[in-house]
Amino acid sequence: MKLVLASDHAGFFLKEQLVSRLESQGHQVLDLGPCSAESVDYTDYAQTLCRALLDGKAEKGILVCNSGVGMSIAANRFKGIRAALCLFPKMAYYARRHNDANVLALGAGLTGFFLASEITDVFLHEEFEGGRHKRRTDKFDLPEVIS
Image (cartoon, rainbow, N blue to C red; front, top):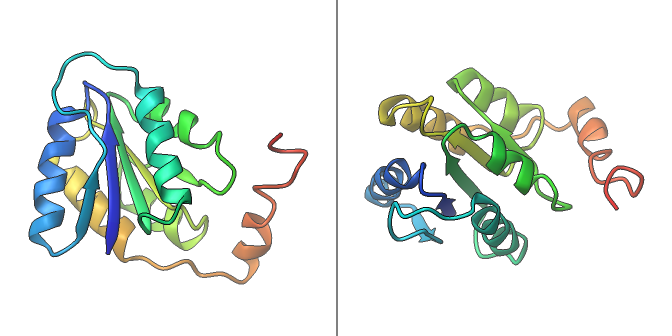
């Protein structure tokens, strides 16, 4: 699967670990940075990832910051992006199955590598159920919701 990853400085080390793990699993990974743990603005990296995803450079994206909250808020400002902050594998399950999330947000300060790996695996392998959930997700991008 083609994936795009980005983080801020607080998520840098977890992002690096995830990039290595995902590449070893055979995924094509585009790492959008940063290239160090030097302080950066998470919004810049969230925007870069969302644009890459919307341009078709990847099927799904993963964003990492300290809590995951800032990245998920920044990403969800983009029409067509459905970013879900997932702290547990079951959250990733529902994010994919019921919400058709295309971006996973992780909090490096709240989630260690092994749990983040488990969450990521669930996020990447679950499929959207459609049906009644599609009727609901279609409402995400209504003009009165996003301007």
